[in-house]
Image 1 (cartoon, one colour):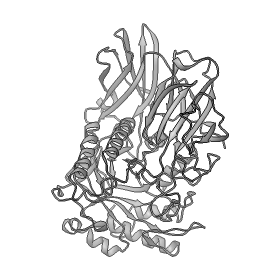
Image 2: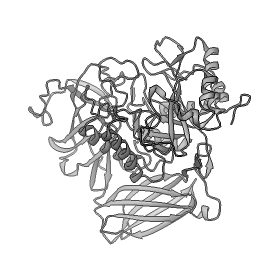
Image 3: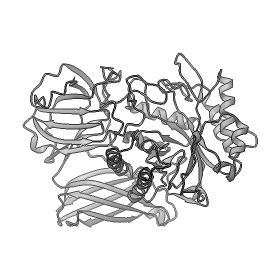
Image 4: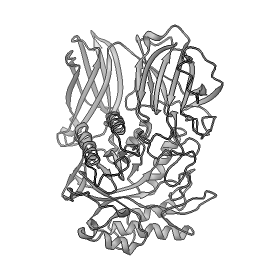
Length: 586
């Protein structure tokens, strides 16, 4: 199989970059001897691995799902001679869970957090045309303090947990920059004012530099500005007015019309371009008013599907860019306007195509499964990195730091667990004031902007009666849990059933389970229409998320099989989702 060669960050792209995916040398270090024996300087790595696929996967070329908690990667690389800038950055999209990196035997960087990126300037460590790159990884298989999401802490998958993804699982690449370059960019649209606010950080700024920003839409000039760089502080803010919005012709972003504005940012000095970055943004707002979610100022019914983001031959890593696009195409073809990415911080390439093709995303953190000071520190740090990385994507409309009290199992009675859930809510709001936040999805809410409920009832009449009145909704106890813990109560938030359905239907050879079962395709469609129409007919429910998009390992409750084959006609699912049944609210 050809290595994944696409750029990992189309939302922050420079001209000069080099993909380092492909064949690397590899070895397990089950006795943890590598550091003592200085493998980062010289060692024979007997195996080969196809980066960025985890060693547990078929596409890695290894496919070993037994426990290996320490392991090493090695490859040689050359920096292209034609690169004109004087600095070289080494980027890792994500390494699960802890990584240490050496270049030519010299330590370069370490990072903890399995779902977020990191990079390092390796210019001063380069020694010529051919260079050595070594990565040591730790991913402790049974560590429940580690944010791991659905990655199981036993060797064999079962119940709702799946095979682990260890080590490098997103793209590795080099990037050519100058000493002064754009380090960070945060874009905040204001659809009412017709402006985009750009907060940026420049590495090694100087007052004789200029920042030029140019905005276009489908090649047509919209706005531009040039400002002098501020040396101290090196973080600056620039608000740009979009001329088409001023004329009343502005293009909003939505799933139905995923309009994106292109943006080029140049750092210059005396007419010389020191750095140039290409990005984009969407002009859209997501707000809450009178118990409804508003998209661009109008009530919007979210019809989501739960997406675990797993693939049969590559687990958490999409096999290629085409597979990402296919998942989004199938999702939209079934009449869904969004996905809840479940217990996975999805890779930026998926978010790019969701932006481009028009798909709402609930961005969710992978949770730990026990509570401790260490688990709090880990999830807090990694979640901040995730929100910072993904802030600019218009497709992300809701943040979900915690799910079903995972990592806070004594939320009802333990004040520390309550304060942690509250802290995650307020931390997220402090990082992003533009999106709703659900502190703990499904039940046992503390402070949340949406009342989200998990409900796997399969009978239509039961669901209709449950969601016909506020009193019946608030008295419901999913999995014998209260919707709110003592001291917190409903305050008019929009009501979303953010997990439901989960109908098992065996289509093909894969065996497994679901929350209810269908005997054949006709029965499957009947059951699906029962649960979906019951929610669409509710006068109070403002959105739903069906479990789930695909089968995953031992779960066969997907609308698609694990290898993405539809279990029913896509148009039939779409008909039900769009409410084209009698008496169903559209």
